[in-house]
Length: 262
Ligand code: ADP
Picture 1 (spheres, rainbow, N blue to C red):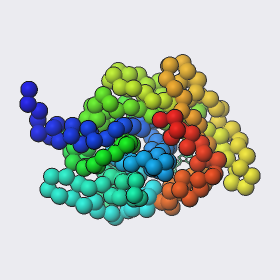
Picture 2 (picture 1 turned 180 degrees about the horizontal axis):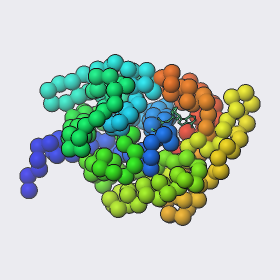
Picture 3 (picture 1 turned 45 degrees about the horizontal axis):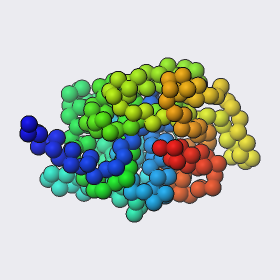
Picture 4 (picture 1 turned 180 degrees about the vertical axis):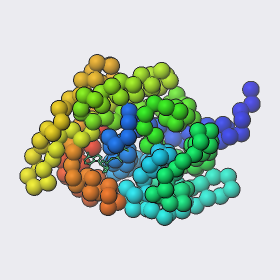
């Protein structure tokens, strides 16, 4: 049976990518984008060729995280080139397509799905070891279409915070991925303990271990915890790559542990 030309194009693009890592979360604000971006940088620093695709339609964060607001990717009639950030890391974000990064995106469902679809189909990544995908949060239509487009090879990293309230969200996310027949690479517990900027001592502000317990309960790997660290938040706000600037920092080591586990 002949493939739709669009599907054929997508299949060809994806066939040149060794691993598809989708970063998901049960809800917004848990640090999904921060984890996705730092994971992508960590993998690229380990000499892997990496693409970071930001499909978070309501809050695309890659332009801000990498100080690339206002950047226009090179576009041909049939495809778009991702924006090179380093020799080994290239970036594409829905935020590059939107006229104003601060403008709320209010689209009807079908238009939104069409945009996600076209966006995933039209980016030509070339040969990659990893494509890290910053997915819209939750388990609704948007993450569903992202997963469907990427197909069975997509592997999920689920980001959560340690509080008990977040745990139900993780459970839903794990089930969501399993129901689609995709693999859960594991759970990352973000904002797990507070790192003092002065003494680097860790204080557990919230109860910890929720993500780890849930991973054990659901039979999926636990990939590690990343502390609540003002330095990491500042790097995101100011748009520099924390992993590159502070490679020896304990928080960078925590991200590295997660990168080693994927
Ligand atoms: P999401 O993608 O889940 O909505 P973000 O990655 O945008 O979440 O993070 C939400 C906010 O929390 C951002 O301001 C970000 O800088 C901050 N943040 C995320 N993870 C951490 C962390 N480990 N330590 C400190 N701040 C963090």
